[in-house]
Image 1 (cartoon, rainbow, N blue to C red):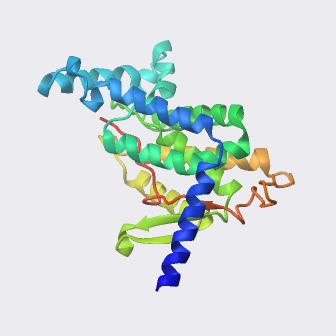
Image 2: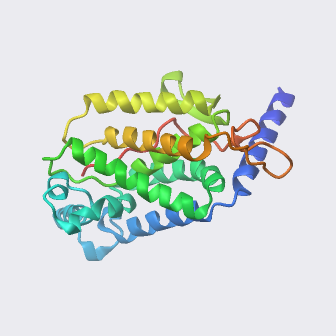
Length: 267
């Protein structure tokens, strides 16, 4: 038992050290920006200037309508509305929504950023996030529900991660297995997550909830981009010490609490 515990402890320390030593300034900046936007906005409920009770709820609704995606407005030809799939990526509907998304961006973003490069990763994140929200809006073109959140872009990161590091082992806690932590390769965890999003999209309505379709679109875009950019016979990039980075053979990923990021929020 002692030997087993020591082995687990050593592996955990190594995994944490690998994540800490992966340079990811863009991922860190995106997390910081999302947190800052949330804290100063009415959704956090921290600023007394936004009021309380019904006043706070009105401020939140006005805030989401200003910066979030409203499909009906987007396809009405408004120039301002055309920017909202970009601004909505940095707006979140609540603390759980924010923390869930940021955790998954932290876990999967660092290695993906390192593989793509900082500039390319930034354009990839914003571009795929924009298209993911646009795809959802196109499927619900008459809806007046607001859509906010970064998980369309984060889903794209997951899709790219699956292609770039399919054998990377991801620690997940699965509710239907009594929350037992399991270390599974990305090629099992991430397609399973994508299948859940697909099933959720088939049952979703236009009312408030999770915009599963944005996750499906983002995941597909991320995987397709990684395949097009890195899948044409290019030699795998080498990590210091000789470990291959392209397929994740020697890669471990810091623990994630569940095989899914927090969903896009429709206040």
